[in-house]
Structures are given as C-alpha cells and as structure tokens.
Length: 282
Image (cartoon, rainbow, N blue to C red; front, side):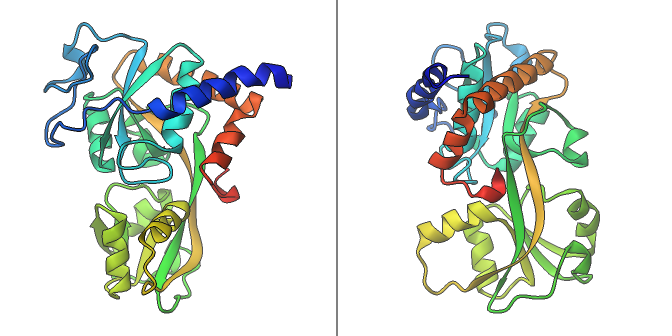
C-alpha cells in the first residue's frame, strides 16, 4: 500500500487516541457493569437483559493496572490498538476500567462483551473465545532483591518457595502446572508486589518486564534494588470474548480484520513506538 493510502489510517489513530475510554468512573467498582447506550452509565444486570444494545458497539472490561498497555483509566497501547482496529471495521468500543481478575469475571459472566490483555493458554481458552491475531507479545521474567537465584525456569524453583505474582495474571501453561508446588503470594497491585520483594518477603517475583519498568520509572525510588533474572515466558496478548454470546465470533473476526489493516499500513508499528514498547514485545 502506498504512503498516500497509509495517511488516512494514521490520521484516524490520531483522532481516536484522546477518546479511548467512555467509562463512568464515578460508579463504585462493587456494582456489576451494564452500560446504557446513550450515557455510558452503569446499571446492575447482565448484557443479555438489555434489548437496546447496539450490536456494533462492544463493551470491554479494561484492566486498570498494567501500564503502558492499560492504565488506571483503561488507556494505553491496548486501547489504542483495539479502538483503531474496530473503527476500521465499523465498530466502536466503550470501556470500564476494573482490576484484571474482575475483568475476567465480568466477561465470563456476560456482564461485558470482552476484556483485554488476556494470555491465550489452556486455562483461558477453556473459558473464553479468542480472535486469531495477537494484540502484541509481552515478556515476563524472574525478579529478585539484592542477589539473583540460579533459576533458569519454573522447573528449577524448589518446592515451597515463596513466589509473588499479580492476582489473576497468566504466566504460561507451565506456571499453571507448577504453581501448586509453591507458596504463592498473590497481590492486586505492582506496588504491593514490589514492596514484598524489597522487604525480602519473597524468594522470587514474576513481573512483566515492560510493566515493571514503567512502575520503576514512575516511582523513582533509589532504595529499590531489583535484579532481573531469567525469562519466564513470552505471552501472546489477546482480547477475550464471552464464549456464550452468539455475536462473539463476529466481533472477534472484525477485530482480526482491523488488525490486519493496521499491520499492512505500518500504523501498528508506529503505535508500538509511540508507547515505547521494547522490541521483545513485538
């Protein structure tokens, strides 16, 4: 495709970038979400009870704790890619920023159509429907304080080792089979996990590399001595759709169509560069 044909898609991204979240942030997170079509406010009940829902509008539970991919407002690389890809295929999205575990719950229970930043692995494929083209790849590694341990993989971590992770996150199929051997400490925020590691309460913590770098740069704490060890896993990241919704296959196919266009025009690569995503995640 010529440069002249690429400009409309790039311009579309520039227009959409500031408008990636429509969630009503005044609503308590304890209420179950359901968006009304005109105002974006939230009521109780499942999506299946709403007869007025526009099939071209997709409601997404947006993780609120995984910058630069999805920040506390649900904005970031994930929103940029998904919003732009869907706009190219005639859809629009509305998002509700919630903790990741809650986003998975809402999607599985059909409180939202989908959620993003989900790793496609055996445990998630059993519950959700996925599109084919990943949004991006994200690496996770072992992290220590003061001194690294000689763990080359999860298989090297001894039984009853204290391993810190983020609640609900996926770290690969091997982690799902090995985690029962560990004393698993699951917390809801990266700040909590960093504090536990810094206070020497963990044998090892698993962080997604780009996310940890974001938090370390933001916190600007000179007393943190965090050491990166070996690579744990490179996750392919997707949007997960409700498996029972009859429109989910159509929505997944539309997202793939938009993603193909973004790759073909080069706009996808420009988005990665704008958000400062490292080459390991491409």
